[in-house]
Length: 99
Image 1 (cartoon, rainbow, N blue to C red):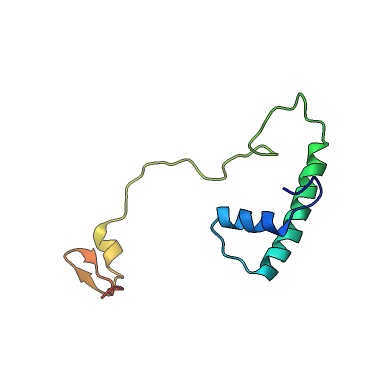
Image 2: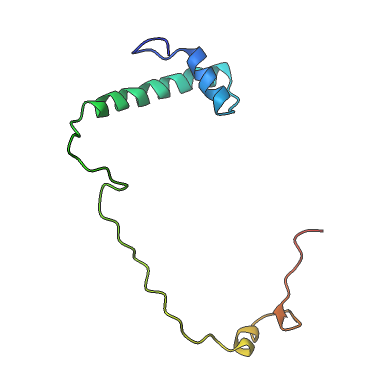
């Protein structure tokens, strides 16, 4: 990068090239402004005292809201297929989406 405070258009174009993103000159200018704002936020975060803080994947405890997976009998095939409009060889027949 150019210096500690600036991000040049060449830097932005290089980042876009590395990310394989084609951008116009106008988009590079807009992207530069956005990236400068993001880098400023990182500088603010770098000032936060984090020594002694355990690394974590989440900022809060995460618990699953899903129920336990319990094995139980399935529905009868005949009951499932009773509402199907088109059946072929005990399977649901659907309209082809590829020719």
